[in-house]
Amino acid sequence: MDIAISLAIGLVMLVIGGDLLVRGSVTAAKSMGVSPLLIGLTLVGFGTSTPELVTSVTAAMEGSPGIAVGNVVGSNIANVLLILGASAVIYPLVIDPKGFKRDIIVLILSSFALLAVVLVGFMPAWVGILFILSLFGYVYFVYRQEKQHPDEAAVVLEHRVEDVPKGPKGILLPLALAVGGIAITIFGARFFVNGAVDLAKGFGVSDTIIGLTVVAVGTSMPELVTSITAAFRKHADVAYGNIVGSNIFNVLFVLGATSLVKPIEIPKQIIQFDIWVLLATTALLVFFARSGLKLMRWEGFVFLAGFVAYTSFLISIA
Image (cartoon, rainbow, N blue to C red):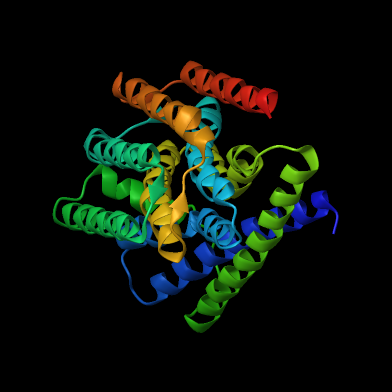
């Protein structure tokens, strides 16, 4: 199959599958009386990260650790520089102080945990278990905190649920929709990874570069759609919370689960350069968000310029 067709089919299936999974699971959860707070914290977060998860697991199983790790690192960089940047340009993002302090600490800790793994150069299964348990602990803590003392952060999570397109009524049809979404995502990931590997071979570049660019941006499409939609609806809090939450999920859950399937070798490209770009991007996000607890349009343009510069550099060394 032609490389471009394989990539295109895979990308479309990833986006559609992720959307159906989120739409079906959220609708089913609502029908079962699950609170919007819990739905926003779990199903929406896990759902939008499904393309990254399935793609990284598929890449690891097929012997392409560069795509598996590059997908996570590149997605987290794209989430901030491209998606959050574009969202801030559309509508300045006001940030809830309580949610910022709590979530940004977890984002920083997860970034340093990723740095430790990258510097070691290998991620065994037991580290993946620690990552996943840490994520579950974080989710439980946030849920308990917002349940007992609801504030703007709880409203953010409920807005995330409001922004999810509605699925069919009832429980069975939405569940079928969610299962179908998972199946489509799995098949889409196979097309996408195969196309990415063939693309790397065709241009004589490493899997890691393809993972950091084509695959990372492709699997970030659900976050892009969700955040841009939130910005246009003036749910600016959702756009910010979606990206911070996604970056935490990507490190702790996507990489964690991938290492359980197959221990991960960290490519030298990421050790030498890209992990430091990710840390610098996270630091810039913290700096901008902390100054006035608002992301202004000019800051969004700075993010976008950073994404263009980073991508251009990767292309130049490919």
